[in-house]
Amino acid sequence: MPELPELNPVIHGKLRLALLSLLSGIEEAEFTWLRSKTGSTDGNLGAQLLKLEEAGYVAVDKQFVQRKPQTIYRMTDAGRIALTEYVQALKQLLGGAMGR
Amino acid sequence: MTASNEELELKDRLRLIETMIAEGRRTTESYGWTFFLWGVAYYIAILWAGLGHSYLAWPVTMTAAGVLTVVIITRKRSKRPPTTTARAIGAIWCATGISMFVLFMALGWSGKLMDYNIFVAIMAAMLATVNAASSMILRWKLQFACALVWWALTVYACFGKGKSLTIAFLAALFFCQIVFGIYGMIREARARKQAAHHA
Image 1 (tube, rainbow over the protein chains, first blue to last red):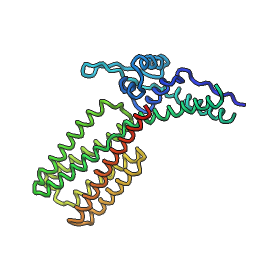
Image 2 (cartoon, rainbow over the protein chains, first blue to last red; image 1 turned 120 degrees about the horizontal axis):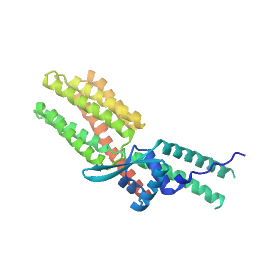
Image 3 (tube, each protein chain N blue to C red; image 1 turned 60 degrees about the horizontal axis):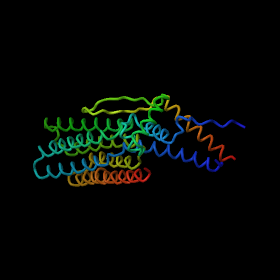
Image 4 (cartoon, chains in turn brown, green; image 1 turned 90 degrees about the horizontal axis):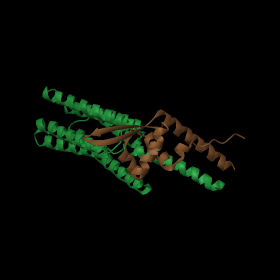
């Protein structure tokens, strides 16, 4: 019997998963846009994005637009690979769960 | 955790991924208003030209519509993250718009835009090309149907005459710009409501 895969714990958190999924369909996004899409608080969102950044799954760029600070997030290649692997693992696990 | 709970949890994760990816992409599809705006602009230009101010009607109306489009898009863009698809579609429409503007202005000023049939044929062919290209990128059959209407008008413009050609042109504008634009706006409003419901 083939061994079932383990799910990546960095991505497994619901908010982190939502953030990576959102970023996978776009080139980059502002912190405020991510907040509006996830309905998360500033503190929680910042903490989860930091975890993704530390794992190398998102890249951050801070800039000033019309003297206002803007934090832009972008998914990295490592993040894209990790999300793809996570989805594959999920599907494999679901196949296993249905087979039980 | 029981097996069925675990399965539900896993399915929930997959749903979350699908919803969020769709949510990110959905923000690019808010261009229904441009079709409507340009449809109305063409009608105004045709009506104005029909009243006897043809030398002013097209340049003034098209410039005004162009400026309005750029202003609205610039304001909307700051609220929306960029996507490759949106940039590709935006580039196609922008390049075609500039080509149409430059070509018709140059033809008009040089006095070579005398044949109404050629004017309609070129305009319809260009609109067909740009609609077909974006419908292929978006895999949107309805927009491809609009391209087919414009191609049909291109052919008809080579054979049709006078009033019948004007009626065909106005009908194509009505269905492929105004009606299609309103449909696009309704679709976007529905999608926004659904997203708010999920949030």
